[in-house]
Amino acid sequence: MKHTVTVINNGVKREFTAEHGENLLKLLQNNSVNISSPCAGNGTCGKCRVKIEGRTSELTAQEAEKLGESALKKGYRLACRNAVYDDINVILDDINNDRNDNVSIMVSGKENKIEIDPIIKKAYFEISKPSLNDQQAFTEKITKKVNELFNNNECCKKISICPDVKPDIMRSLPAILENNDYNITAVKYLDNIIGIEAGDTSGKAYGIAVDVGTTTIAGYLVDLINGKKIDTYSCINPQKSYGADVISRINSTMVSPEALDELNALVITCINGMISYFTDRNGIEADNIYAAAFAGNTTMLHFLMKLPCKTLAVSPFIPVTAEMQHIRASQLGININKQGSAIILPSVSAYVGGDTVAAVLASGMHEDKDISLLIDLGTNGEIVLGCKDWMYSCSTAAGPAFEGANIRNGVAGIQGAIDKVTIDTDIKYTTIGNKKAIGICGSGIVDAVAEMIRTGIIDETGRILDDDELESDSAKQYSERVVTTDGNNSFLIASRTECDCDDDIVITQKDVRELQNAKAAVAAGIRILIKEAGIEIKDIAKVYLAGGFGSYIDTESAAIIGLYPGELKGRIESIGNAAGIGSIQVLLSEKMLANAEKVKNMIKYIELSARPDFMDEYVECMMFE
Image 1: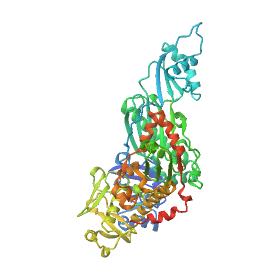
Image 2 (image 1 turned 90 degrees about the horizontal axis):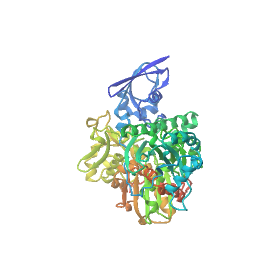
Image 3 (image 1 turned 180 degrees about the vertical axis):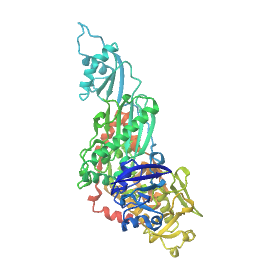
Image 4 (image 1 turned 60 degrees about the vertical axis):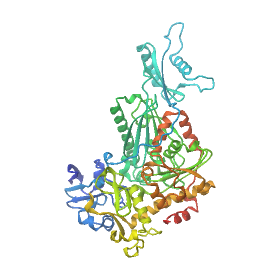
């Protein structure tokens, strides 16, 4: 038996056919309907709420708890907890809509000056025509000429035709030479010739740098001739339907053999869409894109290469590979020049990936004699402490609280998300895009909790005080905003009358605990690295905050909640999407490419779960002091 499901999104109707008993969330996802589901349909996040008109599944206690009485009265249900038993209408809110044009994604970042020495170089030249007096093979002539042009001394490594593409080059070579009067352009990638092209194409050489994040994907089109960044692209990682975190996605591959293929296809299709966007907008050919550099956490890079991920998720947490990979892009299904290269930046461990290596490159801390601390905050928190002589790193399970997941009114960085909160003589907030508020994103949550601590609404343990417990004058004037939500204390940020949503936007006691857990994990990780390095907080000269959340967060608020030691205030620098910038540098400099391998090898990874003192530090960092 089949049923019709009509989905209404901002007044636009779409109809889908569902099997009797088919899960509603899966139906929506399989038909490319954008709907948030950080927990991958396990019913624990409460973000896939929709209004359903028609027969639904029986309400469970878990679903009722996640939605709350107010939402249930208005007809909201969780898509993941409902099956299709009849023709139904499904109405989506803007809060469900994390489509690409609705989300604020960080693509810019700190760009240090580097010497331009791109990994792709081209040379136009003529070789002598064959004769009875000159019977040297074409490949030998070309190799000799390329070495003359690019190698200025005897110490340089000999350049040869890449073995992986040599058969293709040799098969096409006679026709190219004869049809172009022996005038050709050689394409060199590092110490290999990867292409021979007809005529003079030496002025056309491009590369793409891609930061494959768990939540978002950011890409950059780079001119490899002049070193300029031409265009940028960003989107939601389409793998989100498999969960907001890497563990959920890895688990899906362990449950279903097809899931790895699907996760790989999603990211490859996304990257190829990015390439089409670049070529269409900038009037270039995909054949003139010769290199693609990829940064990402270790799991995302495994999905990109379609590598099994099970061993990443279970102790002792071993990746299939952590080495830098140079792969023919066509072997990954990436639609650039068929002989072009995909560079997969090296990882340090299962949970410190190529994105962290790229961020270190972008920060320049690997060349600095002074000690720096790099904190990359996203779905996970990667931390690096060190200088040009040594580095330690760790990864903390910060959880998705910083990105709005597992927060009652939490949303991603979408239009209408509250992104900044101040509590003074009045409560003031701003929203992304200056739209009416529909929820609160990570930076807004940090601000709100910091302000609640500062004004005495939250005590040092993280408890939201009852209205009759408020002591300071600044707290007492907001006693009416201490309300009860789902049976616990919460603090009203914005009433439904001023919002573009059906619920008041509040910070609940559970939300505070979620943030405490996240910040405590990061703060404890920092303490462990400081202890491991045998230094003191005063020895840290600079703190780099990387990643989208790290760039949007208010550094004063971060210090108030204890995300990092308060002594470091004044030494903080936000460096944006450092992983993306580091990937660009790898394209533009053979030295930076070599440095990526150097950084990977010099970082000593500290596994926090193996440290008996981590839990003590974590518990201590839970306090708001």
